[in-house]
Length: 325
Image (tube, helix red, strand yellow):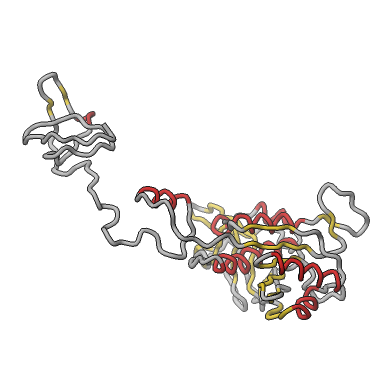
């Protein structure tokens, strides 16, 4: 049985019963499933077999000296099982990145609170926290930032002293009450503001007290898009991961994009079986505040800037399953 080590040599022309997982006794070279055997008290009749059938050989999975797991890989469940199968109980890893998450806006209220005229619920806190935690990060969620320069400066300074990296939503557009960029300039450096993507143009990047800061847009879908396609690869690379960008699928477009746009488009889309073929079909509602379409979609159709698309042309498709986690 499995766990036993047979010591008696099996002579040529003989058979012995063996259970799955048990080592072959010395002299044995082939295993025949019992369903194919006809056994009596004195003998066993076997079908025609090939030498070595149904035998797992030592070293057949990885040769001695072969790398089991390369540096820069995320430890997925199957990787943990592989390590355990070789008896490896410890490997050096990066510790979890500690992220301070802040939401900006006097209009924000938490779910469950009553709304006054002009107020909205803070959707970004929960969307972004979900994205960050899916990456294995340790997340600390701060109170809502008031739309004041001094308050923004104080909150950012405190968060930078406590955490490895800061992520904010809102407060990075061109409004007179968007103070985060100025607070960053006063506390550290603003390295980047605005990307040629849609949604997600008003994205900012800088540092506070030597800690990286990613300023995501305030519109919920724009925050979701930039969290997945901009912040995600940066955060994974900061934790030592090498494969940070999933390869898109190239599938026929079930729509046309006749007029070029100066920004790369991330359309919420899904897959439909049309005529036996899988087509990418965008959701009808693409507003940057409409999270319902992000829930009903299955991924992003990506159209490069200044490009056009005819129905049936191949388009890049990024499924959410490859981006979340």
